[in-house]
Length: 111
Length: 112
Image 1 (cartoon, rainbow over the protein chains, first blue to last red):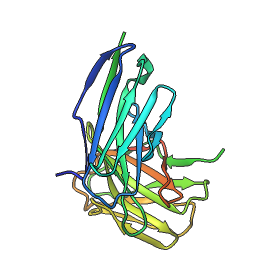
Image 2: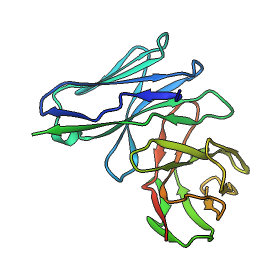
Image 3: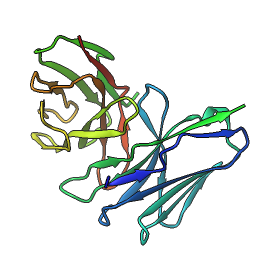
Image 4: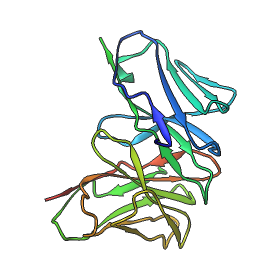
């Protein structure tokens, strides 16, 4: 079993749709959680950090459930420009700190 | 402007050659990381370093080597021992302490 798993995708949705991404992690000692966005053939870029209390940034809402070891990302009113691969990222608690990336879920928003 | 610079953007290597990928950051970050990404796959950790003159193997370190002689620099050498080196290589840095990682623009390595 992979340490971080995500919906396999791809998700193809019409403009204006609401889309939800799910992510689970297996290391209960994980401390920090993030969603990154990666455009085709580009580097990943931070979309948002994920906090236990949940956090929102415009059309994007992230939730963390530590008991279930589950992270989610909700995109409302999706735009064509939201088309990308969304990566769930967990920060390991080990020597130093390093990040474990999920395989990503590709989103295509269609006109 | 602060950021992470990787060079070159594209690199071609003959089989049996070692090549070194450059990664420089001026963000004053302690931690630096190297990842490999294959088409349609997620990122896999090659090496990471939390402080100067110290680094640790990641999940796929075989066939790679690194050094961390300066805080700003974390070069990655892909050796001839790496049997399938063609991939997209990403360098990242972070402050640690649970904060996010910032990425360079990547180097696409192709073995010809």
